[in-house]
Length: 115
Image (cartoon, rainbow, N blue to C red):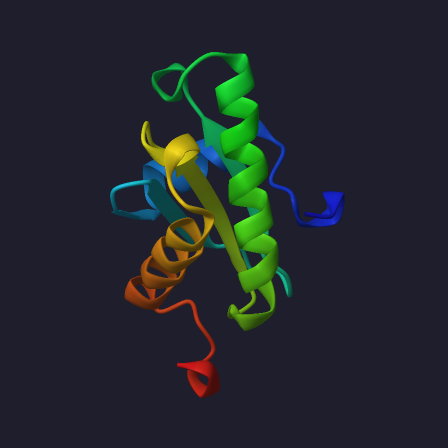
């Protein structure tokens, strides 16, 4: 994920958590909020419940990779918060991609012509 697409300021992350909508599945939590920009920005979070530092970094790399594969299919103009859940490091990669896609569909963030 390129730096210009990262959500880095804690105030922006707090705004998504407090004012945005949240959806979840077994391996991932998605928070989203409109940002009035022509691009999406995303933050990836893995808490201590996911595991030690190695497992958390591994989970975040897997989320970023899955997000990169789906980014071109998304509507623009949202701040996204992707939070890893405990089973994510051991989940098959394709289930992470499919789970992320299903959350984007539920949120209505996928472009219409790609559904």
